[in-house]
Length: 368
Image (cartoon, rainbow, N blue to C red; front, side, top):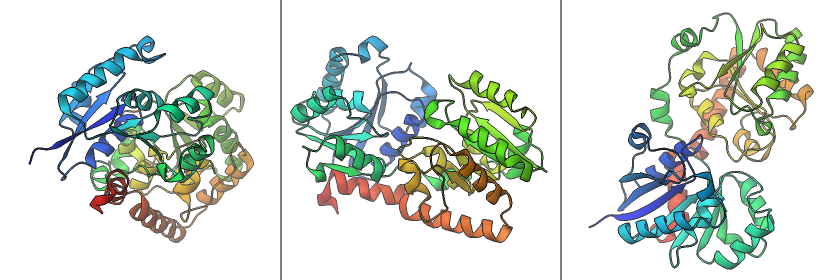
C-alpha cells in the first residue's frame, strides 16, 4: 500500500518548534502515513533536516515581508506541494501556518496553538469564522484550549480540543550526561545546591521575579547558586539587576547552551518563573532528567505540575523564595517521593506513546 502523506507546517525551527516538528512526525511512525515537514522561515540546514525523522524536510526560507499580510507567495508554494504530495491532512503550528494551510480548499487542517491569546485580534476571529470550515484547533494544554474556546465562541467546542506536548523520554534520557560529567562540562561545583532556569531572556519568562526571589531566599540557602540558561533581549537588564543586588558571585548566566537538556543532571532543582506558557518543553525535559521542579501557576505550567508539586502565583517573588527554600531543605526521602510523582505524571500524560494515541483519536477517530 502506498503511504499517505501528511504536511506538518511550522513557522520556523527555533525552540520549541524543532522539537514540535520531530514530535508530530513521530506520531506517523509505524502507520500508513508519511510526514512532509515544511519550515516557512529559516535557512536550509542539513543538521535540522537529519534531525527530523520525516519523508521530506523542506525549507521555504521566507522573508519577514513574505510572512506578513496575505502571504500569497507562501500559500502558492504550499498549494504546489499539495499538488505534488496529495496531503491527507495538514498539521499547522502557530497562526501564520494555520492561515496559510486554511487557504487550501477541501483539506482538513489541524491548527496547533502553543500559547494563549492566539485569537484575541478581531481580524483573526473573522478569518476563522469565514475560512475555518475544515479547521480543528488543538491547544497544547487544557488552559490553551479553553482560551481558544473563549476567543472563538462561534466554533463548536468539539472542534477545539487539547493535546499535550510529548517527548521521547527513553531516547532523551539516554542522551543525558551523568551528574559528574555534566557538572564538569559546565564547571559547576560539586558542593553547591544548584537551581537552573532555562528559557529566552524575555518578559514572558520573567527571570526578574526569579532573581528577586533568589535574593530573598539566599540568606537561608548558603550553599545555593542560580544558573540561567538562555539568550534574549533582556540579558543586559537582568545582568544589571544581578549587579544591583550584588549577586554576581551567586548567579551565573550560561548563555544559549546547545542541547542544554543534556546537562540538566548537573542541577538540583528546575525553576520556571514564566507569566505564560502553553505546555513548556523545557519543563518536560527537566522531568526526563528527574529534576525536582518549581513552576509558576500560569496556564500550561499548572497542568504540568498538577499532582507533582505545588507552584507559586505569577510575579510573586516571596512565594517563589519560600518554595526555593523548601526545595533546598528537602530531605532525600522527600525528594525521591517527588520524583516518583513526577514519573507517574510523565507516564500518564506526556510520553510519546500516550500522546500519539490521543493524536490519532483527534485526526482520525475511526482508527480507535
